[in-house]
Image 1: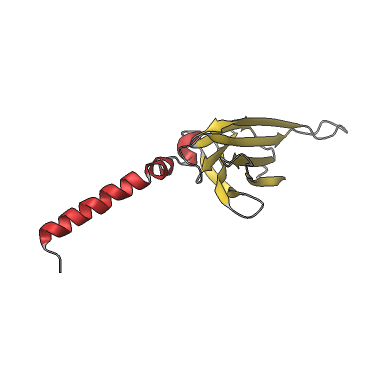
Image 2: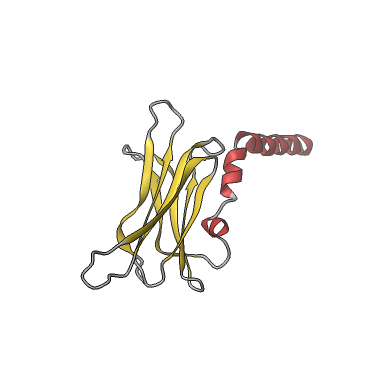
Length: 159
């Protein structure tokens, strides 16, 4: 059995080691979709999709949020892989516009994409009464970069 003083040193060493081993993950955990999008935004039905590679590796998640007061949607892609390392990361939001007579449905689209350490976004578009699509991408750090994608490619969350 360990003496009390040895237990204290062991606990301290394990605690310090845990902090040193994963500071990037601790920082990334501090980012929430609501925090990135801002006050008044809340997650909607079908609001979280994995951003994954063709082989199924998950690099992060893309989130869809809505602000009932302003009528704006918000999309953010938060990394869970390569956290703290600048890799290409994007968040995209598309909205349908109302159909005018017999014209085809038009869309509006906005993307935030470049090398980020933790997340891409927030991307905001007015969408009260409109349908939306959303997506996110995250690249890995290797020269033959695997690309992870996710989101919803069909119109939804209408209204």
